[in-house]
Image (cartoon, rainbow over all chains, first blue to last red; front, side, top):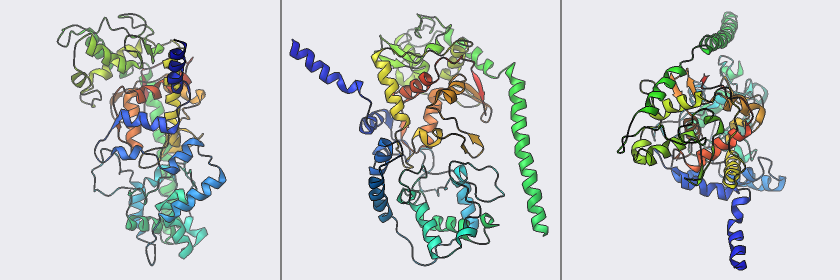
Length: 196
Length: 263
């Protein structure tokens, strides 16, 4: 009898402990269902999501460095100039569409950039979760290094700052390489309103 | 030079425009504070509460929302809480669905088939939520907490709040975890802190001006998941209830003053 009571106590134990990211993932897998393009695989945390959840976005430096290096490997930089059309870039920056269960699969997504960043001074309705990018190209120029940094950061922001709130727009398949180039144009082209 | 002047004028006029819009919204809030559009939904909800429905052709008037069968006064302010008959923690909408299936004998598929309405046609759940929540106005939010399953639900809700997931790596805290930031022009309350959670939780469910719809907390959770680019949560699941429970416990002690008005 006593053994039975002990066994019950042991079985009940997990309910009392704080749920781990793996426990939460199981709950989500049970309670959510696929809809439209949003499939269940999106609930599987990768090493970045897990490290950021476990550390509340303050990962130990060593772990952050090694995971950032892994993320950097995910970025494939196109050959030649990375500066696309800033006008198309502005439209991509404005659009918050894409990747939700009611967005049509196959339709081009936006970058939701203005949700979090100030860019063109003409757009006053901008968020502040991310830093202001006004004048981005003025301070950095439009050289190869600046292009590479801007492209890489949009493609996979986690390669530069592991627990940033910014999505991995290229690595997640949200934006195409051409769309990312257009955003680089918006950021770096001297004619772009961002740099006026 | 001309272009510069034009730009400057544009900047000034759009700034003025943004200010005007904020003033306009404030004026609208004051105007409707005395006669909220939510009242129309409350009336519709009362009729639905009393309407015999389902195979058993009975109303919801015997539904126990935590204060005894049919007791509506203060019921909403005591939710979410643990219900022994269902052996789980439930928020208002989950409990209503439970009563629809048990008391009225309706199937879950039918009763939950259209929980989120449209501007033209609000859902039964939305109108019922308006009617029931209104009867907790002026009462303190006191969601269930001492029961082990309530504690477990709260802890799950907190863990869910910080879980980074989905195609864009977001957690609830990605938007609701930093002081003083906004998305576009929308201010973002830091919802794991009582100071910010209190006024928010004291005003849901609410009439949403931008869509002319009455919206509930289950809807709010659903639409946040959508924007987090995850799959869709089931209505009344442990996940959505735990999040609502976590937020309400964080806001506990605040006087309920809804159903409110949202942008």
